Length: 407
Image (cartoon, rainbow, N blue to C red; front, side):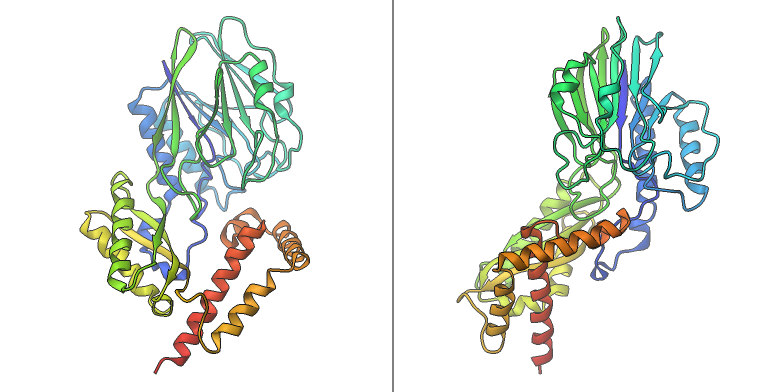
């Protein structure tokens, strides 16, 4: 027997963080989360899974209109087997105001208390607690019921677990406490990267179905869980994304532009070859001390075109979201009027008090923004991110000055 474990679908949410430089064709980015969800349903049917578990954040927030719910019900009818649904922080009971009668094969976990759903014909017992509100600071797993004797017990939980990383902390828990529950599998959601926290028992984040911004790189999908004699014997990740994000890091320490272009082409071809016939959306970062620093400042469009051309030569499709310059002059500093300006930029972040104040101001701004805006703006949360933002600002200043001085 097999079942499918997915989470963090964020149905109908747009791709975030796209630069105006991307010039993307609308058909490339349209309905990506719907298409990934449909691919997940295709996989469930092809694998003949017994049921599907969605561990939170099916939706990205309140529906803009009823087409979101209609699409989900349409896909559930096509699925034709049970789907057990848990609400997370993005689709908590208090967040979603619109609703439709669910498809007959969909069962949603209660948001008032932990609920146990038994499937005696399969020897399965599922335990879950939906989010009643967006903010859930307590450990929900603490109230999950004792395992059902003679069944494979599956805990369904939306949680930041022990380390949220770049994600906000919700319903935190300890892996050790999950192990002590006596369940055979923990179907987690909330973290947008595939993570196997433990194999005895299995404690798994499948990641999200579709990368939605430049930091969500690599294959995205769900987990197929293999069960034998009421025990989990294998868990395999299966990609269902329809568009793949990539981060291309290119060493620009070269004496001629052709060498940099060759390295860029090689990185683009590698990204395309690893994308399993999916189109690639890439953020390109050039690094290193190079005599080409000034040339590269005005060459972003050329570099983006080289990436696309290399992808075409490799038989794939690649679009450049943005080109980030992290280069510096080979001599260690800018010439002429740029040198004191560059020094002023660098000095601004050498004062700990100023860095702390800036981070506090960004944090205050972040708290006032909806989650979608937070992803688009990508405000710095630590000193490294703040320095990266300052580098972006400096690059734009230097590029503008270079263009102004051009004949």
